[in-house]
Length: 238
Image (cartoon, rainbow, N blue to C red; front, side, top):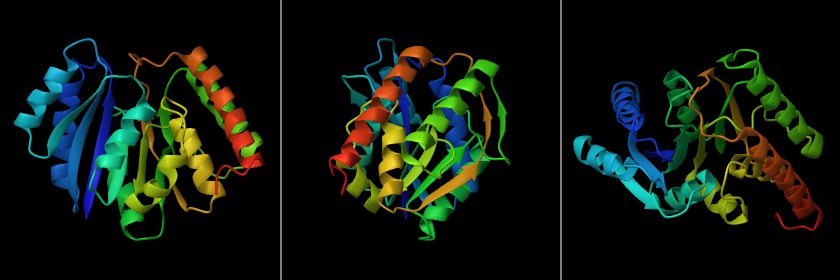
């Protein structure tokens, strides 16, 4: 059983070395399955790619992939489609979600009980440290998702997810978004097609150096919700 852990990055030359060292040490000590770490460099303009390549030589099981265009969704589609792993996952480079949630997330998929696993900041057992603004925006957005599609999963946008190779093979060709809305599109289509989603509470700490442009991202997400709902109306997703 091989598990892929993809880390999408854009201009993260300072954060990447410590994050990869921490993640590599954790996976080595706490995970019973085989794994690979793939740093997906999204058109960085600093030395992120060079740092990633150096880390791939320093640590076993780490490799670097370069994309000429930005977009978290684009990076995940490329790496996941090309990986030979049985389970595909990703997490944010800042490791905002506590890594101790990762083994149970993956084990839920290895057991065969679920097709997708997601970390959630919004379940009762979750603990988060973030600004009131981010908290309100996150909860409002997830309420919008539920209002549009009557979904049951709790947190569409937490950067801590995993999917089986079989489920990814079915879903990835249906997903149009190449940016931040990728997660929501994946989960909505998955749930509506009857795939089983494991919702896991996580401990999460906000990255104060986040590159997410909240207003423009929110607008793109709303457009994405409208587009996906139209897709279901026209029978696109089958």
